[in-house]
Length: 145
Length: 363
Image (tube, rainbow over all chains, first blue to last red; front, top):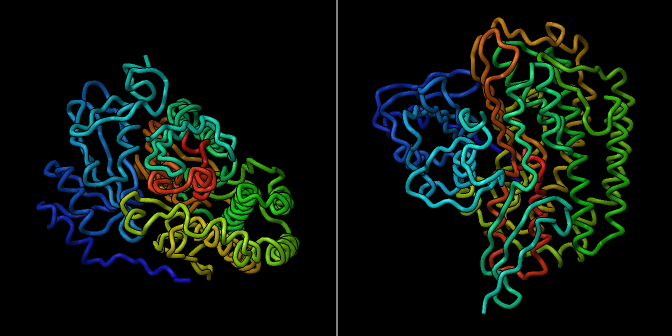
């Protein structure tokens, strides 16, 4: 039996913006360390998270009012702390990171089905939610109406 | 010649809807595809039309086994929006109910695993023990399934007589030590049926991002109660059982050892429970004074990490978005890697070994 001693090194946390090649630093809010900047690239982010041995948790999608598009929040766990990376989507698509992070598979598929967001560069299995063949059946405003 | 065997959408052991298409070469599984969503309920969408009281009751229905964990995670996230801190006694009560729920879940799973191993006497023994856990939960909350214990800023019910509950827990622990633990840790039947099958290597566990006992049985020492303590877990002493074999037996051992650790935590929480109030602000959610519009919370459920992201507009009675990431959603894709190379007859036990919850997954 082993005991858990997984406290992230502060230096590792602080090195992440530099590894991502951005000047911004972390802000702590709502229980999450956020790195919010337009300079983020999702595929580079996934590669850096792999390098840091961070564990992927989930993607939370939000539909923004009017025609502002969507916000996707990617979350990873780094030794017990939650890292958050928001991406603003003007359109309907963002690059998939499935080939870099296997754990993202089901949540990309679910977000595709719930919000009709296209994760480019990957193939989708048949619908998970089985509400019909129209993506966005559950959570996308236009389809709900 | 390969052929496809569809298993489901009615699971042979767990009586829940999900489908596994097994590609077989003779009796050996060469690949598998999983399908979920047969009973998808759209709870995240429903939550947007519920107010701050109703949404807690709704989220309690995400899961029939770990119902308390869902309200605990939601309430912690809502507390993050308003800055309401539950009093110390409430934090201890949250630990007690969460650990009883873990016992309930693990013993239930042990019974089903025993049945799948062909050990049906053990199935009945486990379900008898589970009744005792539910008796304790009923003594505390008045309910056997949905306990309605959590509110924003604390808990709805006090534990009036912790020593009486402690006596019930100690009796339960004696029964566990006498029956369940020896069977699952030392019996030849359990070993021969479970050892070396359904292996999830540490490398694959990392890559799939699995959580909870499934991760700990593959050598990953992750447990939010230790890594990111919530409620009163920072004040509890306990070990996090880890096994490295990654097979069904390792998952069995991790849960058996966790039963003992839960009893240890329960003893501490019931003995050291501080006096005082059980909720702040009378348990009301002050949606007119939010300190943040989005908050997240994570809790170590019996099956692993649950995460809630909650978004709320100021002066609105309803949440604008609640996203739930359940542990089975993270663990289930790994079943594909566990069944590849396994014998067809072992696949029901392998699937059951992650203790899947289709109710959570089809939230």
